[in-house]
Length: 540
Image (cartoon, rainbow, N blue to C red; front, side, top):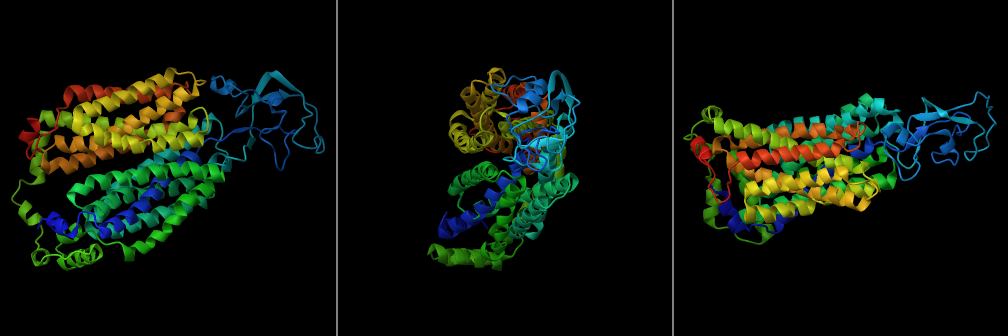
């Protein structure tokens, strides 16, 4: 049966659907927060060498007045000039050999030692800014030799997203959307709390992976549960609003990180409250479409009847009878060519193979820049919390931009245009002086706006370029390739240790190449019917 006919009588977005849609959007808020909490949890705080004989042993002051006499400017390590003095992380001036007793200093305001600015040595103990406590201070992941461990946390996170996407997608088809939705939320919550109680880097990394596996299942299952019960004219709106919850959830991370200044409290705040969603087992319905696909017609009818009562509508006897006697649509699909045969035909087509390979790169490049800009936002001049929040919230107009340009300019121009805007702004960001703070931030935000729109366009464009039998497979594989780009993104800030402009150069080069490939090798699909066969796809 056509469930959309049921929705026409039930109401496309009645009280029942709206209530359940809002309920499934709330966990998306927390999944978004967990997806980027590592940016601050594994962020690099302000820290400097501990000066024996000058720093108080119990409560050293990072900003003590004498520090500039004992420690060179951070420029010594980074090669980048600062507008004001910032202590080096791992270097200090060599001091004289005078013996300093326990009572040589009364507080952090004085330092009795003499330092030689001609001799610089490396230190083995550090003083951290107490306003920003991360895993760097927790396990002394200091200096350039440990930077890879911080970037690795982001890669482990996206590896978990990679695995979780496949894991929960498969299980949801077998055991139901609702059950796997709740399981993914509980796994995210439990693993998030596991991060909070971790007592070593290795233990923490394991829980980061498990937390990401759980996080990966929440957004797609919320999308399915929320959107499958609304009418076709409301699906586009519901799909976009879900992204708004996601963007606000990402920005929420900056607020909590700023408020608490502690990585444990941050992770606890974005993970523990989600435990309340266990009650969804009794409150939200299973996907009616999934129940009908499994011939569980009675359960599907009960949900639709309950929805009708909430929406205050009366369903016709024809609709109720059709739900009782509905058959699995897979029976009708058996007359179509098997997917394996269609896949073999697609692989024998040079057009579709080259199109697929290029699409994989475009997805990976887009994800690399999309997540790379979020991660790198805390490295910009100015307040890192404000920068991060802005970069996340700009995704909302980015999604609206995609909705505006797709029907007006077509798929290819929309994709190429947004990729080129991102490339140009990131390239300009590499040459803008850091002292021109407002210009750097503006370029950064325009780049994130454009790459967000690119992502939204890609989902539509990819589905329209391939035949029906392999469409879902290609979209799924393309999404998987985007995870590869996402796993590389956390190492973007590490490139800045080579020279500061390198991350922006990479963010400019990746979408530029993607745009060039798309403009010359992808056809326009606007206004065309979806291809059913390989020949129809080749003919686009």
